[in-house]
Length: 120
Length: 105
Image (cartoon, rainbow over all chains, first blue to last red; front, side):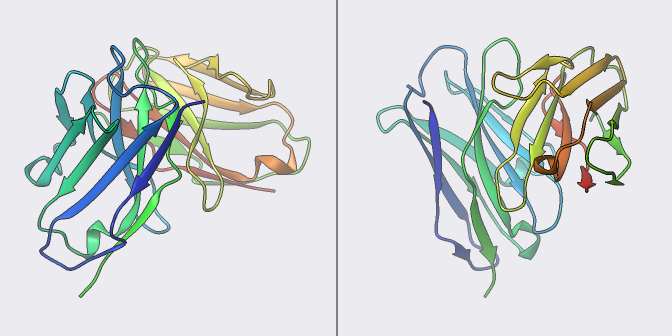
């Protein structure tokens, strides 16, 4: 059974760079044609897609966050990562990682989510 | 960017009721639409993909329909376990979620 697990610092100061990692178990992150994505949810609010990375390394970002987002993949560790620069309180959210299957680009497997708070 | 609008934002219903949630896209997305259920403190769970395909293991009381710009999620007989917020998501062009519909029982 595929499992995704987010990890990160929990607390980041304003203007710093947020770094989160998603570890995939029960399957290979380099399996053909999968996308791996990040989605966030501010407290009490809805879901926002941040960006996705194809197994080959191609990246796709939400236009509203593109200037601050970098997603990368480390196949040796079966992980993919999110970096979000110049964070503010508005970036406080639960961050989820998720998988997109080939041919039908919904999100079928999700991590449990990790709360990241931006505060001095 | 494609915008997704759900209605209603909140829905109150009784056990056994037939419940329908609507999702409208700002432009045609074909059938590239998914529905998710999210319970408090939990990650979203996939219910429906490609507008009407039921994800494995999801109860058959859930169904989806529509194409183009208008879609619906129907719960044929509401159960206490269905208390949750439901989100639609388009994946015709990148990924966009609706704002959610909270179902209260």
